[in-house]
Length: 166
View (cartoon, rainbow, N blue to C red):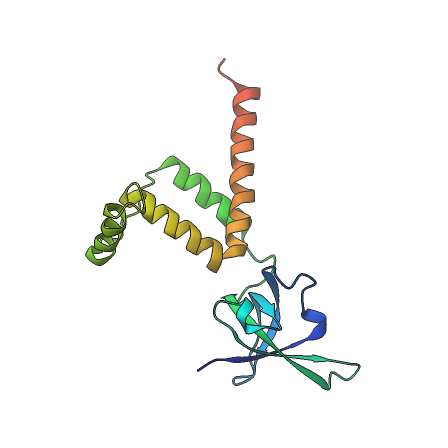
């Protein structure tokens, strides 16, 4: 069953091919939320389209049927806690960078992909898949991480160059 959403024309992005953050209403639950999504007038342009009714006009009484592919829900633009993210970057940079799922099923499937030549190692496969998933499903966090990580590295380099060994 596909979901149905509603938005105002004013919320639509200028670039319909881009991933954008905007406000929609779930037609069934009437919940209003902000989402990262792609929109199109043609469902073939999207991987997993749902219906999107776009209202327009001075009284928003003209409806057009569009389609939406929701990538991330509950997005609050500008609500990434950059201080907490920076703390995570600094803390993880100083410790172990090993991630362990302790899951035989995941390991078996990753091993299969490595043995079939898709990836060089299980670690490469896990990193690539997690990175791609985070980028797609948590784009705002992914973008904020790049900014914060760059700032941490810049600050570390500046401290090293300016403070240096005495």
